[in-house]
Amino acid sequence: MKVCVVGMGYIGLPTSLMMASHGVDVVGVDYDPAKIEKLRAGQVTFEEKGLDELFEKAVRSGITFESGYPRADMYVISVPTPYDKRTKKIDPSYVVSAVDSVLGVCPQGSIVSIESTISPGTIDRYVRPAVEAKGFTIGKDVHLAHTPERIIPGNMVYELEHNSRTIGVDDPETGEAVRGVYSSFCQGDMVITDIRTAEMTKVVENTYRDINIAFANELARICRRDGMDVYEIIRIANMHPRVNILQPGPGVGGHCISVDPWFLVGDYPEQARLIHQARLTNDGMPDFVLDRIETIMKMNKIRDVSRVGLYGLTYKENVDDVRESPTLQLLERPLTYGMKVYDPWVSADIVDNQYHDLDAFLKDVDLVVIMVGHKQLRDNIDVLKGKIIFDTRNVCPKGLGVYKL
Ligand code: SAJ
Image 1: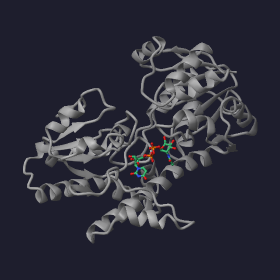
Image 2: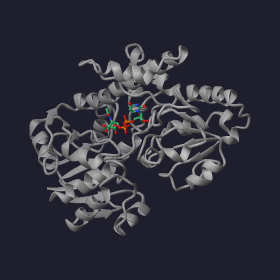
Image 3: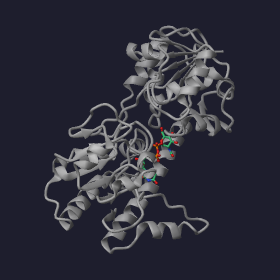
Protein backbone atom coordinates (compact mmCIF):
# COMPACT_ATOMS: atom_id res chain seq x y z
CA MET A 1 0.00 0.00 0.00
CA LYS A 2 1.47 3.34 -1.03
CA VAL A 3 0.34 6.34 1.01
CA CYS A 4 0.64 10.00 0.05
CA VAL A 5 0.30 12.45 2.93
CA VAL A 6 -0.72 15.89 1.68
CA GLY A 7 0.41 18.83 3.87
CA MET A 8 3.67 18.61 5.81
CA GLY A 9 2.45 20.66 8.78
CA TYR A 10 1.98 20.00 12.48
CA ILE A 11 -0.09 16.88 11.86
CA GLY A 12 0.85 15.70 8.36
CA LEU A 13 4.57 15.59 9.02
CA PRO A 14 4.58 13.47 12.19
CA THR A 15 1.86 11.20 10.78
CA SER A 16 3.80 10.55 7.57
CA LEU A 17 7.04 9.95 9.52
CA MET A 18 5.29 7.54 11.84
CA MET A 19 3.83 5.53 8.95
CA ALA A 20 7.14 5.45 7.08
CA SER A 21 9.16 4.38 10.09
CA HIS A 22 6.73 1.48 10.54
CA GLY A 23 7.25 0.12 7.06
CA VAL A 24 4.56 1.92 5.02
CA ASP A 25 5.65 3.25 1.62
CA VAL A 26 5.08 7.00 2.13
CA VAL A 27 5.45 10.17 0.07
CA GLY A 28 5.03 13.49 1.87
CA VAL A 29 3.67 16.29 -0.30
CA ASP A 30 3.48 20.02 0.26
CA TYR A 31 2.79 22.83 -2.19
CA ASP A 32 5.42 24.99 -0.48
CA PRO A 33 8.69 24.15 -2.29
CA ALA A 34 10.75 25.72 0.53
CA LYS A 35 9.28 23.25 3.01
CA ILE A 36 10.04 20.31 0.72
CA GLU A 37 13.60 21.57 0.22
CA LYS A 38 14.08 21.78 3.98
CA LEU A 39 12.77 18.26 4.53
CA ARG A 40 14.89 16.91 1.72
CA ALA A 41 17.90 18.60 3.28
CA GLY A 42 17.23 16.57 6.40
CA GLN A 43 15.60 19.19 8.63
CA VAL A 44 12.22 19.04 10.34
CA THR A 45 10.02 22.14 10.02
CA PHE A 46 9.06 22.63 13.66
CA GLU A 47 10.23 21.60 17.10
CA GLU A 48 8.54 18.71 18.86
CA LYS A 49 9.72 16.16 21.40
CA GLY A 50 11.05 13.04 19.62
CA LEU A 51 10.42 14.40 16.11
CA ASP A 52 14.10 14.51 15.06
CA GLU A 53 14.62 10.84 15.92
CA LEU A 54 11.39 9.87 14.18
CA PHE A 55 12.45 11.84 11.11
CA GLU A 56 15.78 10.02 10.89
CA LYS A 57 14.06 6.68 11.22
CA ALA A 58 11.55 7.55 8.49
CA VAL A 59 14.29 8.72 6.12
CA ARG A 60 16.21 5.48 6.71
CA SER A 61 12.97 3.62 5.90
CA GLY A 62 12.67 5.43 2.58
CA ILE A 63 10.15 8.28 3.00
CA THR A 64 10.37 10.81 0.17
CA PHE A 65 9.13 14.41 -0.08
CA GLU A 66 7.63 15.90 -3.24
CA SER A 67 5.96 19.10 -4.41
CA GLY A 68 3.85 17.26 -6.99
CA TYR A 69 1.20 14.65 -6.29
CA PRO A 70 2.20 11.03 -6.99
CA ARG A 71 -0.05 8.05 -7.73
CA ALA A 72 -0.88 6.26 -4.49
CA ASP A 73 -3.38 3.83 -2.99
CA MET A 74 -4.33 6.17 -0.19
CA TYR A 75 -4.15 9.95 0.22
CA VAL A 76 -4.18 11.49 3.67
CA ILE A 77 -5.15 15.16 3.45
CA SER A 78 -3.73 17.17 6.29
CA VAL A 79 -4.03 20.81 5.26
CA PRO A 80 -5.22 23.87 7.21
CA THR A 81 -8.93 24.39 7.88
CA PRO A 82 -9.22 28.04 8.88
CA TYR A 83 -12.52 29.53 9.94
CA ASP A 84 -14.07 32.83 9.06
CA LYS A 85 -13.72 34.96 12.20
CA ARG A 86 -16.97 36.82 11.42
CA THR A 87 -19.36 34.02 10.42
CA LYS A 88 -17.57 31.35 12.54
CA LYS A 89 -17.89 28.93 9.65
CA ILE A 90 -15.13 26.72 8.28
CA ASP A 91 -13.20 27.69 5.17
CA PRO A 92 -12.84 24.35 3.36
CA SER A 93 -10.93 25.76 0.38
CA TYR A 94 -7.56 24.16 1.25
CA VAL A 95 -9.19 20.76 1.72
CA VAL A 96 -11.21 21.02 -1.48
CA SER A 97 -8.24 22.19 -3.52
CA ALA A 98 -6.06 19.35 -2.17
CA VAL A 99 -8.81 16.84 -3.06
CA ASP A 100 -9.03 18.37 -6.55
CA SER A 101 -5.29 17.92 -7.04
CA VAL A 102 -5.45 14.33 -5.80
CA LEU A 103 -8.25 13.53 -8.25
CA GLY A 104 -5.97 14.61 -11.07
CA VAL A 105 -3.58 11.72 -10.39
CA CYS A 106 -5.21 9.07 -8.21
CA PRO A 107 -5.64 5.56 -9.61
CA GLN A 108 -9.11 4.03 -9.68
CA GLY A 109 -10.28 2.71 -6.31
CA SER A 110 -7.90 4.78 -4.21
CA ILE A 111 -8.87 6.13 -0.79
CA VAL A 112 -8.95 9.84 -0.05
CA SER A 113 -8.98 10.49 3.68
CA ILE A 114 -9.34 13.88 5.33
CA GLU A 115 -7.17 14.06 8.44
CA SER A 116 -7.67 17.81 9.02
CA THR A 117 -10.28 18.81 11.57
CA ILE A 118 -13.43 19.84 9.73
CA SER A 119 -16.81 21.03 10.87
CA PRO A 120 -19.51 18.33 10.93
CA GLY A 121 -21.01 18.04 7.46
CA THR A 122 -17.99 19.39 5.54
CA ILE A 123 -17.46 16.18 3.60
CA ASP A 124 -21.13 16.03 2.52
CA ARG A 125 -21.31 19.73 1.78
CA TYR A 126 -18.00 20.37 0.03
CA VAL A 127 -15.92 17.26 -0.60
CA ARG A 128 -18.52 14.93 -2.14
CA PRO A 129 -19.81 17.60 -4.57
CA ALA A 130 -16.20 18.45 -5.58
CA VAL A 131 -15.47 14.78 -6.29
CA GLU A 132 -18.73 14.25 -8.19
CA ALA A 133 -18.20 17.44 -10.19
CA LYS A 134 -15.08 15.82 -11.64
CA GLY A 135 -17.13 12.85 -12.84
CA PHE A 136 -15.90 10.41 -10.18
CA THR A 137 -18.29 7.91 -8.61
CA ILE A 138 -17.75 7.76 -4.85
CA GLY A 139 -17.51 4.16 -3.65
CA LYS A 140 -16.18 2.97 -7.00
CA ASP A 141 -13.64 5.37 -8.53
CA VAL A 142 -12.65 6.77 -5.18
CA HIS A 143 -13.44 5.99 -1.52
CA LEU A 144 -13.74 8.76 1.05
CA ALA A 145 -12.71 8.63 4.70
CA HIS A 146 -12.23 10.93 7.67
CA THR A 147 -9.42 10.09 10.09
CA PRO A 148 -9.24 13.01 12.53
CA GLU A 149 -6.04 13.28 14.52
CA ARG A 150 -6.05 13.43 18.31
CA ILE A 151 -2.43 14.18 19.19
CA ILE A 152 -1.43 16.90 21.59
CA PRO A 153 1.45 19.23 20.67
CA GLY A 154 4.28 18.58 23.11
CA ASN A 155 3.58 14.84 23.23
CA MET A 156 2.70 14.09 19.62
CA VAL A 157 5.02 11.18 18.96
CA TYR A 158 3.89 9.24 22.02
CA GLU A 159 0.22 9.99 21.43
CA LEU A 160 0.37 8.99 17.74
CA GLU A 161 1.34 5.53 18.84
CA HIS A 162 -0.84 5.20 21.90
CA ASN A 163 -4.10 7.14 21.39
CA SER A 164 -7.15 5.41 20.05
CA ARG A 165 -8.49 6.70 16.73
CA THR A 166 -11.75 7.30 14.90
CA ILE A 167 -12.11 6.19 11.29
CA GLY A 168 -15.13 7.54 9.42
CA VAL A 169 -16.01 5.76 6.14
CA ASP A 170 -18.95 4.97 3.83
CA ASP A 171 -18.38 1.19 3.79
CA PRO A 172 -16.67 -1.40 6.03
CA GLU A 173 -14.12 -2.49 3.38
CA THR A 174 -12.67 1.01 3.19
CA GLY A 175 -12.66 1.10 6.98
CA GLU A 176 -10.58 -2.07 7.14
CA ALA A 177 -8.14 -0.77 4.52
CA VAL A 178 -7.65 2.47 6.45
CA ARG A 179 -7.30 0.56 9.72
CA GLY A 180 -4.62 -1.55 8.04
CA VAL A 181 -2.51 1.55 7.35
CA TYR A 182 -2.92 3.11 10.80
CA SER A 183 -2.40 -0.15 12.65
CA SER A 184 1.16 -0.19 11.30
CA PHE A 185 2.01 2.20 14.14
CA CYS A 186 -1.09 2.82 16.27
CA GLN A 187 -1.48 0.61 19.32
CA GLY A 188 -4.75 2.21 20.43
CA ASP A 189 -8.27 1.03 19.61
CA MET A 190 -9.61 2.06 16.23
CA VAL A 191 -13.32 2.69 15.95
CA ILE A 192 -14.83 2.49 12.48
CA THR A 193 -17.95 4.61 12.06
CA ASP A 194 -19.65 6.78 9.45
CA ILE A 195 -18.04 9.99 8.22
CA ARG A 196 -20.54 12.38 9.80
CA THR A 197 -20.09 10.79 13.22
CA ALA A 198 -16.30 10.96 12.91
CA GLU A 199 -16.47 14.66 11.99
CA MET A 200 -18.75 15.45 14.92
CA THR A 201 -16.80 13.36 17.42
CA LYS A 202 -13.59 15.23 16.74
CA VAL A 203 -15.18 18.64 17.23
CA VAL A 204 -17.01 17.42 20.33
CA GLU A 205 -13.73 16.31 21.93
CA ASN A 206 -12.17 19.75 21.62
CA THR A 207 -15.40 21.48 22.63
CA TYR A 208 -15.54 19.37 25.79
CA ARG A 209 -12.08 20.59 26.73
CA ASP A 210 -12.91 24.21 25.91
CA ILE A 211 -15.97 24.14 28.15
CA ASN A 212 -13.99 22.60 30.99
CA ILE A 213 -11.23 25.20 30.71
CA ALA A 214 -13.93 27.90 30.64
CA PHE A 215 -15.31 26.52 33.90
CA ALA A 216 -11.87 26.82 35.51
CA ASN A 217 -11.50 30.35 34.14
CA GLU A 218 -14.93 31.33 35.44
CA LEU A 219 -14.00 30.01 38.87
CA ALA A 220 -10.85 32.15 38.74
CA ARG A 221 -13.00 35.22 38.07
CA ILE A 222 -15.41 34.36 40.89
CA CYS A 223 -12.57 33.76 43.32
CA ARG A 224 -10.84 37.00 42.32
CA ARG A 225 -14.01 38.97 43.23
CA ASP A 226 -13.80 37.83 46.83
CA GLY A 227 -10.13 37.06 47.37
CA MET A 228 -10.49 33.28 47.38
CA ASP A 229 -7.64 30.99 46.31
CA VAL A 230 -8.90 29.30 43.14
CA TYR A 231 -5.96 26.89 42.93
CA GLU A 232 -6.47 25.60 46.45
CA ILE A 233 -10.21 25.27 45.81
CA ILE A 234 -9.61 23.29 42.61
CA ARG A 235 -6.98 21.13 44.30
CA ILE A 236 -9.34 20.19 47.10
CA ALA A 237 -12.42 19.78 44.85
CA ASN A 238 -10.40 17.44 42.62
CA MET A 239 -9.94 15.07 45.54
CA HIS A 240 -13.60 14.14 45.01
CA PRO A 241 -13.61 10.92 42.97
CA ARG A 242 -15.88 12.34 40.25
CA VAL A 243 -14.47 15.88 39.98
CA ASN A 244 -11.59 16.81 37.69
CA ILE A 245 -11.41 20.56 37.17
CA LEU A 246 -8.79 21.89 34.75
CA GLN A 247 -6.51 24.87 35.36
CA PRO A 248 -7.42 28.52 34.78
CA GLY A 249 -5.06 30.49 32.60
CA PRO A 250 -4.64 33.65 30.49
CA GLY A 251 -6.85 32.28 27.71
CA VAL A 252 -7.09 29.42 25.28
CA GLY A 253 -4.92 29.34 22.19
CA GLY A 254 -3.75 26.85 19.60
CA HIS A 255 -5.41 26.00 16.37
CA CYS A 256 -7.86 23.48 17.81
CA ILE A 257 -9.64 24.19 21.04
CA SER A 258 -10.03 27.91 20.35
CA VAL A 259 -11.40 27.21 16.86
CA ASP A 260 -13.40 23.96 16.70
CA PRO A 261 -16.23 24.95 19.10
CA TRP A 262 -16.99 27.91 16.83
CA PHE A 263 -17.94 25.43 14.09
CA LEU A 264 -20.81 24.27 16.29
CA VAL A 265 -21.74 27.81 17.31
CA GLY A 266 -21.66 28.93 13.66
CA ASP A 267 -23.84 26.05 12.43
CA TYR A 268 -26.15 25.65 15.45
CA PRO A 269 -26.50 29.13 17.00
CA GLU A 270 -29.82 28.29 18.66
CA GLN A 271 -28.63 25.07 20.29
CA ALA A 272 -24.97 25.68 21.10
CA ARG A 273 -25.57 28.11 23.99
CA LEU A 274 -23.21 26.70 26.60
CA ILE A 275 -20.55 26.15 23.95
CA HIS A 276 -20.88 29.77 22.83
CA GLN A 277 -20.63 31.10 26.37
CA ALA A 278 -17.54 28.98 27.04
CA ARG A 279 -15.86 30.46 23.96
CA LEU A 280 -16.70 33.99 25.12
CA THR A 281 -15.39 33.25 28.62
CA ASN A 282 -12.09 31.88 27.31
CA ASP A 283 -11.72 34.61 24.69
CA GLY A 284 -12.35 37.16 27.45
CA MET A 285 -9.38 36.00 29.52
CA PRO A 286 -6.78 38.26 27.86
CA ASP A 287 -8.92 41.27 28.87
CA PHE A 288 -9.20 39.90 32.40
CA VAL A 289 -5.40 39.58 32.46
CA LEU A 290 -5.05 43.14 31.20
CA ASP A 291 -7.32 44.44 33.99
CA ARG A 292 -5.22 42.56 36.53
CA ILE A 293 -2.01 44.01 35.05
CA GLU A 294 -3.41 47.53 35.44
CA THR A 295 -4.46 46.85 39.03
CA ILE A 296 -1.07 45.34 39.89
CA MET A 297 0.73 48.27 38.24
CA LYS A 298 -1.32 50.73 40.35
CA MET A 299 -0.71 48.76 43.54
CA ASN A 300 3.02 48.88 42.87
CA LYS A 301 3.10 52.43 41.51
CA ILE A 302 4.37 51.33 38.11
CA ARG A 303 3.20 53.96 35.65
CA ASP A 304 5.14 53.05 32.53
CA VAL A 305 3.88 50.01 30.57
CA SER A 306 7.31 49.60 29.04
CA ARG A 307 8.43 48.36 32.48
CA VAL A 308 6.01 45.44 32.11
CA GLY A 309 7.34 42.25 30.51
CA LEU A 310 5.29 39.37 29.15
CA TYR A 311 7.07 36.03 29.53
CA GLY A 312 5.80 33.62 26.84
CA LEU A 313 4.42 34.07 23.33
CA THR A 314 3.40 30.53 22.46
CA TYR A 315 -0.12 29.24 23.08
CA LYS A 316 1.10 26.85 25.78
CA GLU A 317 4.24 25.57 27.45
CA ASN A 318 7.16 23.85 25.71
CA VAL A 319 5.95 24.22 22.11
CA ASP A 320 6.99 26.73 19.43
CA ASP A 321 3.45 27.28 18.12
CA VAL A 322 2.05 30.81 18.53
CA ARG A 323 -1.26 30.34 16.72
CA GLU A 324 -4.13 32.14 18.52
CA SER A 325 -1.88 32.50 21.56
CA PRO A 326 -3.28 34.44 24.54
CA THR A 327 -0.18 36.67 24.51
CA LEU A 328 -0.79 37.66 20.88
CA GLN A 329 -4.45 38.29 21.73
CA LEU A 330 -3.37 40.47 24.64
CA LEU A 331 -0.92 42.42 22.49
CA GLU A 332 -3.78 43.47 20.20
CA ARG A 333 -5.07 45.73 23.01
CA PRO A 334 -3.70 49.29 22.64
CA LEU A 335 -3.05 49.46 26.40
CA THR A 336 -0.24 46.93 25.98
CA TYR A 337 1.68 49.00 23.43
CA GLY A 338 5.23 49.30 24.69
CA MET A 339 5.24 46.16 26.85
CA LYS A 340 8.33 43.96 26.52
CA VAL A 341 8.02 40.35 25.40
CA TYR A 342 10.26 37.29 25.64
CA ASP A 343 9.86 33.63 24.72
CA PRO A 344 12.71 31.10 24.64
CA TRP A 345 10.82 29.03 22.03
CA VAL A 346 10.31 31.84 19.51
CA SER A 347 13.47 32.79 17.67
CA ALA A 348 11.87 34.89 14.92
CA ASP A 349 10.91 38.51 15.61
CA ILE A 350 7.13 38.45 15.51
CA VAL A 351 6.07 41.32 17.79
CA ASP A 352 7.39 44.73 18.84
CA ASN A 353 9.79 44.97 21.76
CA GLN A 354 10.63 41.26 21.61
CA TYR A 355 13.76 40.05 23.37
CA HIS A 356 15.77 36.93 22.67
CA ASP A 357 17.77 36.93 25.87
CA LEU A 358 16.13 36.31 29.24
CA ASP A 359 18.62 38.35 31.29
CA ALA A 360 18.35 41.37 28.99
CA PHE A 361 14.55 41.11 29.14
CA LEU A 362 14.49 40.89 32.93
CA LYS A 363 16.89 43.82 33.29
CA ASP A 364 14.44 46.07 31.41
CA VAL A 365 11.24 45.29 33.33
CA ASP A 366 9.86 45.60 36.87
CA LEU A 367 6.69 43.56 36.49
CA VAL A 368 6.94 40.12 34.86
CA VAL A 369 3.67 38.62 33.63
CA ILE A 370 4.04 34.86 33.27
CA MET A 371 1.83 34.06 30.28
CA VAL A 372 3.32 30.61 29.59
CA GLY A 373 4.87 28.20 32.07
CA HIS A 374 7.77 26.99 29.91
CA LYS A 375 10.11 24.48 31.55
CA GLN A 376 12.92 27.04 31.18
CA LEU A 377 11.17 29.25 33.73
CA ARG A 378 9.81 26.51 36.00
CA ASP A 379 13.35 25.13 36.41
CA ASN A 380 14.86 28.56 37.08
CA ILE A 381 12.15 30.39 38.96
CA ASP A 382 14.82 32.12 41.09
CA VAL A 383 15.77 34.34 38.14
CA LEU A 384 12.61 36.32 38.95
CA LYS A 385 13.92 37.29 42.40
CA GLY A 386 13.35 40.97 43.06
CA LYS A 387 10.69 41.32 40.38
CA ILE A 388 7.01 41.89 40.86
CA ILE A 389 5.36 38.81 39.35
CA PHE A 390 1.90 38.30 37.89
CA ASP A 391 1.69 34.55 37.53
CA THR A 392 -1.24 33.62 35.26
CA ARG A 393 -0.11 29.96 35.07
CA ASN A 394 0.42 29.24 38.75
CA VAL A 395 4.05 28.25 38.36
CA CYS A 396 5.53 30.35 41.24
CA PRO A 397 5.16 29.61 44.90
CA LYS A 398 2.90 32.11 46.68
CA GLY A 399 4.81 34.97 48.25
CA LEU A 400 5.40 38.67 48.57
CA GLY A 401 5.15 40.42 45.21
CA VAL A 402 3.57 37.37 43.53
CA TYR A 403 0.08 37.97 42.15
CA LYS A 404 -2.17 35.25 40.80
CA LEU A 405 -5.04 35.38 38.27
N1 SAJ B 1 -5.30 25.32 28.82
C1 SAJ B 1 -5.71 25.95 29.99
N2 SAJ B 1 -6.00 25.20 31.09
C2 SAJ B 1 -5.91 23.84 31.07
C3 SAJ B 1 -5.52 23.20 29.88
C4 SAJ B 1 -5.22 23.95 28.76
O1 SAJ B 1 -5.80 27.19 30.07
O2 SAJ B 1 -6.16 23.23 32.11
C5 SAJ B 1 -4.99 26.12 27.62
C6 SAJ B 1 -3.57 25.91 27.09
O3 SAJ B 1 -2.64 26.71 27.74
C7 SAJ B 1 -3.74 26.27 25.64
C8 SAJ B 1 -5.14 25.78 25.31
O4 SAJ B 1 -5.81 25.68 26.55
O5 SAJ B 1 -3.69 27.67 25.41
C9 SAJ B 1 -5.20 24.46 24.58
O6 SAJ B 1 -4.17 23.58 25.02
P1 SAJ B 1 -4.33 22.00 25.24
O7 SAJ B 1 -3.01 21.50 25.68
O8 SAJ B 1 -5.48 21.71 26.10
O9 SAJ B 1 -4.75 21.45 23.81
P2 SAJ B 1 -4.11 21.58 22.32
O10 SAJ B 1 -4.88 22.67 21.61
O11 SAJ B 1 -2.65 21.65 22.32
O12 SAJ B 1 -4.54 20.16 21.69
C10 SAJ B 1 -5.91 19.79 21.63
C11 SAJ B 1 -6.08 18.37 22.19
N3 SAJ B 1 -7.51 18.10 22.42
C12 SAJ B 1 -7.98 17.65 23.60
O13 SAJ B 1 -7.29 17.50 24.57
C13 SAJ B 1 -9.45 17.35 23.64
C14 SAJ B 1 -5.46 17.37 21.22
O14 SAJ B 1 -5.72 16.06 21.65
C15 SAJ B 1 -6.05 17.56 19.82
O15 SAJ B 1 -5.44 16.70 18.90
C16 SAJ B 1 -5.78 18.97 19.39
O16 SAJ B 1 -6.40 19.86 20.31
C17 SAJ B 1 -6.31 19.17 17.97
O17 SAJ B 1 -5.50 19.29 17.05
O18 SAJ B 1 -7.53 19.14 17.77
